[in-house]
Image 1: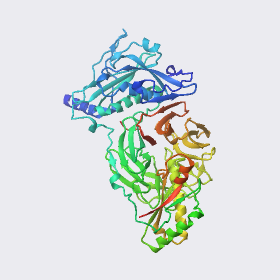
Image 2 (image 1 turned 45 degrees about the vertical axis):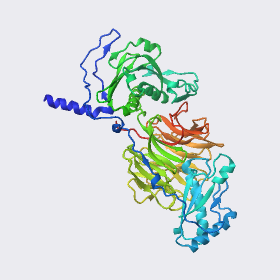
Image 3 (image 1 turned 120 degrees about the horizontal axis):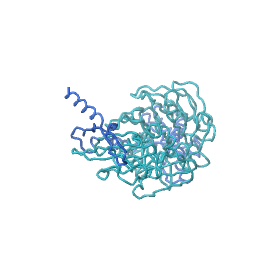
Length: 190
Length: 424
């Protein structure tokens, strides 16, 4: 019986650890002159285990590095010559401006002539506003270019429109000239 | 408990960086009528032998909550000593925290505390914790939780964890840290951006958006093992993950059907079910804590506003009406408060809306606030903001009167998300 009680006590102590043991019955030494009842200390030292430093910490986090799995090298070339690969947009606008129509037509020609070629249209915004909302706004820019290509007869399967929001600015700075460079959609051939 | 309350009365602004030893935290108090509980904190017997300044961590936690004003008791008092309360009452302090720390033969520490009502001279209870040195901060936060709960009646959040992102040069890191920003541990390092970390309801996993494959893809990451899996990598962009309270599914934003629309997806993966139908943007979903509703951002009315819809789909109801740009909703666990970012002129400011009377209040004096996230007890909001060209994390009380800058790293801290209560 005594053994059972002892092991029960050990189990309770083991379960305690970082979650704590209540100190309800701990004796209190009086320094104020008033009388305090004294009871034996039920909090025994916890059993000794091979606990060492941080590897047993309850809060440990295992670090992961994703760099190895990243696949971000430059893709194959798209159309030859001086065809623009970046389409710029006005503030708060998701409409492809007419000045980029020639470039978009060249990309469409290339994609139709190379049906196995694939392109990512990557939408971006300037730095103003929330990160997630800017993902959605950048998506609108990429989608606008995708629709332009689609109207020119490019197959949907060759094109993926994605957004980086404000996460990958091409120009640093918080002025209108930087903002204008960052409101864009880029062609990335895969 | 009324004896614990004493009005602060005057405006006290920023006792910032007042003490070099505690320069890693800063609390700003503004406004009148802040009611705080005065507590005296004794030096724990044996505290000098521990690698962490336990009573300083407890004091900083309590102060950051905005509900306490702590003063040092100015002497060593352990948990087995009945103190003389007269000098404590004189401070004045209505409560007194005492305790001890002893190093055990196996290298662990036994940390004990006892809380006293110094007005009545009554023992309010105590606790003993036996931990490895790496968990001494955790124990300090647990003690602060106990004190907070005993004196306010609400559950403490100091032992919870937060996740956030930093950018250091070209490196992007996902961090898990204590709720005070200390003890940061890198969960993920990437050459490409990471955004929108979101804790699972158990606090074991984080969902987030990573751009490591040159597009936004949603991952779920078990932080204790480092194992991660792709939750959503559909054609187009995958973003804005938010867990349902039962942990079985997540609301996400996908552009696979055109536009950015909300979907529900099983947390084990599988075929997502479309939740909203609009021709514009629907994004940034969050569940109400009972799981019945989803709040989200939509530009269906012409400008981004916050809307609500049943989590099973159905009618959509507009929630915010003031301002022309309201994004990044976060809900308190009791469902009463909605925190969000509202554009005011050229500034982006944290606001909170009382969903009972629809009253909206701005909480900060900064201009680039982002991504509010409620503490699990609903009493604090964490957010990121910019000052002096740097991004940092702040907490604020719901009335905006008490704000604290989190301890930090030197690099840009952003995208905070406050984790759930953890089982001890």
